Length: 469
View (cartoon, rainbow, N blue to C red):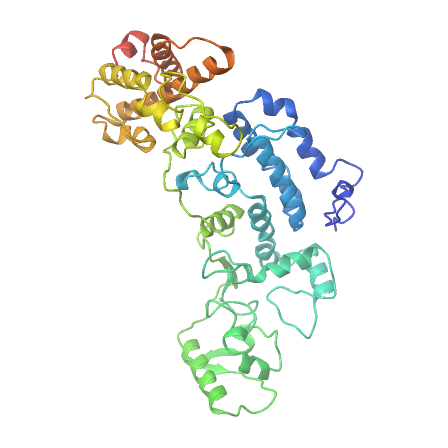
């Protein structure tokens, strides 16, 4: 098929992974993750690049081959290094575990998708296509190569034949949830009964009858028999056309046969062709996105503190808030804890205590003045915050219509970002800290972002200064 064009290999010399005579997947990643991009883009920009471009780069290969874990690990390491601003020669601190980064936003992550999950979800489509495309040439080739009379898997698979199909077939038992695996996600809907196999395909139960009644399947003389050749209805009653290798003996086998017959008696044929349903979404059928969602939800453990992302603000502000609520900003206490610096640094705003995120945004005199001004500007009671989580939940207690509440949430996030921005300018550019400049920046920046991104064409500067929404 396509073995000459693309080849994944688990060789230790990863630079020898070849895609014809073109660049390797790793080379393409390196080209897109150039060092100048990591240093010139904000973290929000790097996140956007990772999600919009880099997650799609390997999808063509992932939809055909099961990538070796070594390759997955290397690609994930490149993505992780790029996200945190690192380059080939410069390593930056990863402030949040990659497992948390690849968690959905609603559960406290950044919404990046694990490449391993992307690979599995794309390969699973071949199970669906194999059932639907019964007359296609590729399916006939697979049957000719992998069919063996000694085994009866749901899709043909010969252990003696290696290749991409072998890796796909081995996904049969891969769990998509606590109760569903890839192998039992495709269920036959029997109409005429001339396509769905009685013992091997899933149709009567949530798994093949060969797995439910292995002793009866062992006695079956025609393993691949279709439903029509075992059942027929005459005057409302079923006729069972069994073909056993020998007479059924033993109480257990007889009881299993009686149980099977009782289940079938509630079944009925129709005049339609046999069809297939995807258990994950029977109405719309198979989608890789649905499989990906199931795999992501399977291993999710929500974070204790989750940021409510704001659609009116740029990604860099939301990412900043996401880091702040988890206390993953490079403040003095965090740098000391990670061994990056040895001596604690005092707060650059007040110079009284060691710099911590909680102090900068809640208890510092500068922060208190900013929150007092925000309270007066937004015409609400005085804001008192004692923990980082309190700051990012202030909007939940804001009374007013949705637009005003979302505007207030944006102002809070921009206020924290402006305080952090003033801190960085003072430390790295020696720019004096000015309360009036911080407050003016909050009003101006929030106005520009909200007006443009929330599509509030009627919002003008005069109304904004008076918080007249």
